[in-house]
Image (cartoon, rainbow, N blue to C red):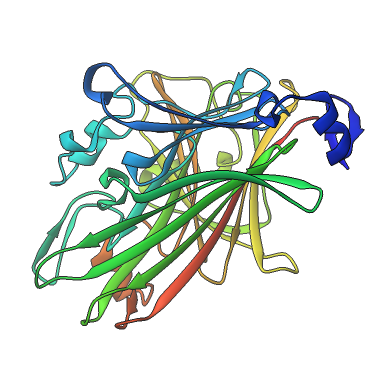
Length: 342
C-alpha cells in the first residue's frame, strides 16, 4: 500500500485512477537555457507527496533546488547552477560557481581548504561538482508495491600520469516518499595508488533555516577555529541574518545508530517542518556543520565526509586520507529527507 493524499492505495487502484503514473510522480528531463547556466541538463523529480528536487547531470549529478509542498528546502547561491565550462579550479575560484543546492559533491581526489600537498596545488573542494556525468539514465518501475524513481550516471576524474578515479552514482526516491537516497561507488580504475576524499555538501536555507530552527543530533562537537570558538555555545541555534558576519564551522562525531548510520536534523517547529541527513559512518565518519548567518549568505550546511575540511595535506597528517589501490573500490550511502509534521 502507498500513502498518497491522505489515503492508502494499491498498485491496481493507482493503475485504474491514472492514464500514466507520471500524472502523479516521475522525472522530467530538461536543460537550463539562460546566462552562464545555459546547457546544464536537469532531471526534475516529483513524488506525489509534495517532495520535489532537481538533479544536475552536468554538475557531477549534484542536487539543486528542492522543496516540500511549496516550501523551499535548499539554499541557492547568487551565481546559480553555472555550467562547468566556467569553473575556476585555482585557490578559492570554486566559490564563483558554487550554486548551493540540496547537495553539492566535493572530491574525488581531494576536498577542503586550498593547500599544497606533496608539491601539488589544490583548490577548494575538488573537481567533482564541475565534471559532467556520462552514461546518464533515468527510470521508474514497480518493485513489489513500491514505485521507485531513479537516475544513474558515472563521473571520471583522471589525468595522464595521475590518478584515475571512477564514480558510479545512483539517486533514487519513490512514489509518495519525502526522502531521497544517494548511493555512490568509487573505484580506482588506474594502475597507481590514488588519494581519495569525499564530502556531501548538503545546503539548507530559509525558511527551513531561521531563528526558530534548532540542530538536533547526538554528537561530540568541537569548533574548527577561533571564530567558531566564539559561537561554540550556540552551534545548535541560528540567529537572524547579520551584515558581514563570518562563517562558523563545527566538527561533529555523531553517535551511530544500530545500523551504523549517523543522523543530524534541522527542526523548525514554527514552520512545522524539519529536514535531516543520514549517512553510513563506516565510510563517512565526519560531519561538518557550516553555519553562515551573513545577510545574503544565510545557510546551514550539514556535510558528511571522509575527513575534516582542513585540506588534503592535513587529512594525510591526521590519518584520515584514504588511498585506494588499483582496482580497490569504496561505497557510500547518504539519505536526505523531510520531517513533514512536528
